[in-house]
Amino acid sequence: MTWIWIGVLLAALVAYGIFRWWRRGHPRKQPPAPPSYSAELSQRLQKNMTNGTKRKRRGKPAKKQPPRHR
Image (cartoon, rainbow, N blue to C red; front, side):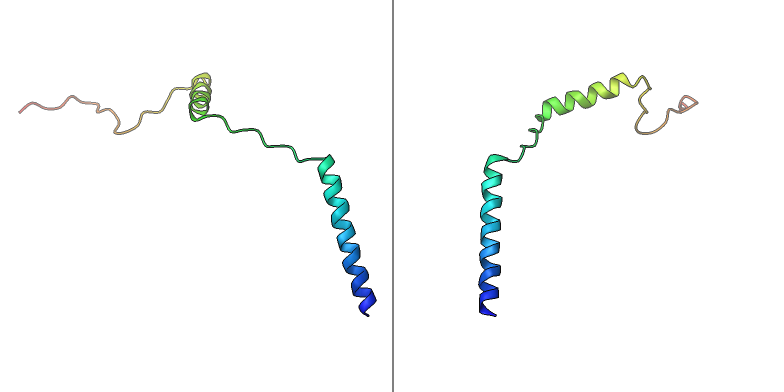
C-alpha cells in the first residue's frame, strides 16, 4: 500500500515537472493593455457622433405655453 502512494506522488511530481517544462516554452499571451481614459472617452464620443440619431434631451420637457406675467 505504501508503494502505491509513493508511486502516485512520484507520478504527480513528474507530471508537474513536465507541465512546468512545457509552460516555459509556451508562455501565456498577455491580454491587451486597456486604453487610457482619454482614448476610451474619445472612442465613446466618436461612436455616439457617428450613429446619426438625435440625442435625447435630459431634464424637463419644454413647455408649450409661455409663462404668464403677473
